[in-house]
Length: 252
Image 1 (tube, rainbow, N blue to C red):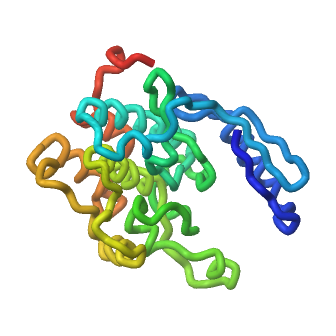
Image 2 (spheres, rainbow, N blue to C red):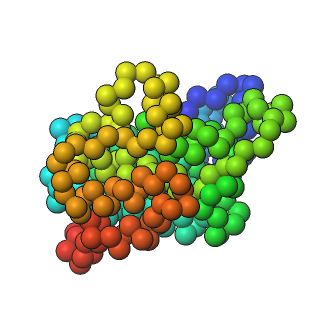
Image 3 (cartoon, rainbow, N blue to C red):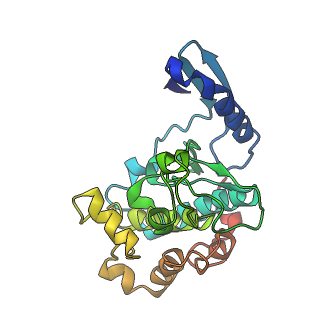
């Protein structure tokens, strides 16, 4: 269960939030955390969801993981992302802290607080213009193609926006962190430095072990294409050698 404090001046937004949770309650995939419902109690919002006993991926990958484990988790994560994208949902905040593990070591993507449902099932870039997410896992277009809430409210200039491809960049960031135990752009001490790197189209650095492994390096390069139109889709990445694991050998 997730508890969210809601102040009285936010009460008008409760209806839309309840509606959004209802959308996610209808999602059904073995690699997504299940949402069971929502209750509102005065100034507290209770969201009931599936319990994942082993906590988050952020907890278990601090020292880096074995390659076989990384590939397995990547397969699960891409299955979840592909399902969301086929349902016309962009997660927008994929990171290890939002990825959960069950007692059977099944990976499940959760925390849909930043998710956005797009109207056009074919859209990959350009439909979403609002800025959300966690900087170290954001795609470059989130820095260059978005508007702040204040800019939107004041009728600011148009932004070219973004789409499903932001989730693919984030998947690359999660894979990189699983391999190294370090979050993307770990070498930078200030968030503004990360923003500058992203705005300049510079992906997070790779270790020599990664660049010397054609399978890993090739997969990550497909995730970190600066032009979102050139970035691989979740389905394409599932067919990549790195993540294309025989599902019959994975204990669901």
